[in-house]
Amino acid sequence: MRVLITGEHNYLRGRDNNEYHMMRHIEDRGGSDIKLVMDCDLTKAVFDDFNPDIVVSFNCGGPKDQSFLSWVGDRPVCLMIDDGFHFDTVACDIPPRCDAIILLVKWETLRQQYQSRFPEKIVTSLASRYVDVTKFHPRSVEKEYDIFFYGTDDVPTKVPLNNMDAEYFDDKWRAAHGEVPTTYNYYPLRKRLRDLFLKHKDDFKVNIFTPQGSWFPVPPIRGDGLSEVIAKSRLTICTRARSDTLLKKYLEVAASGGAILGNYPKDYKDMFDGNIVEVNEYMSDDEILDVVRRALDDPEGLQRKADALCQDVHANHNYEKAYQDFISVISSILERRGTTIPR
Image (cartoon, rainbow, N blue to C red; front, side, top):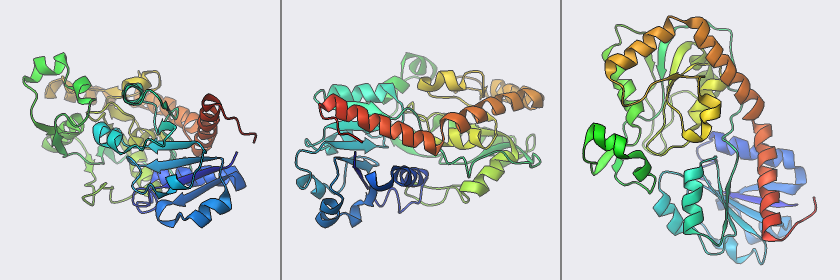
């Protein structure tokens, strides 16, 4: 089957991010049968020359440029979405001429939301996120830090940001905090842990990377350099956002052989349960600090947790697995739509 992937330039190539390199790997592995073209480079001549059997539009949200839809004829069209944070906004951008919605990460609650909103469409997902294990891998370096923090931490957003907010602001949250506010930090536990360890920086060796840029902020170093800093850290903070999704930092840390401090999305309980140093936002500061101190006092136990996740990520969450997963999902969509195209 010939698969044309049209990607949102500003989100993929413009940011030179993990998803861009993953899709490039998928293109390379597909040989002449898979082609990745940024939306700004896609013309009808390019489309006709490749003559795809199926079109996949990869976007942060809904496709910004929908001109290609006038060229597809009766070919299947899939929208691959990497935004689980703005469901209502993204759902409004999905064109009627879309046969399938593919979520970039396994997230059953969000999948059900899209299926309920679009009962006539196929709604599915990749099996996980994936990471470049040639850049993120264990290193023989000395531990220099107790706590490492990187990523955005102070993002107050409107409530409800999307339909998933009802899942976050549940009865337990209301019992602990009271009335739901009109705005709330999108990374509540992440910000709390950052502030807590800044307050106790004399008790722990703390390393905090401040993200740069106002739109999709990035850490000051990425790839190999980031992986090395993770490897030098005994614990790296990874937490859920208000939306219960697997963020790529979980895989970056695990692939680098780092131990995770935080919580995890429920769809990945089998992967993370027992393999991270778990804290939650309902703990007191003293309870969190006690958990961290006991973990740091047990380096062998930390290493066992880190090794288990590292082996899992390198075996099951690498770019080659992403290619296999992508092909499986596309083939399944073609079969469910009633059109099976021979390879």
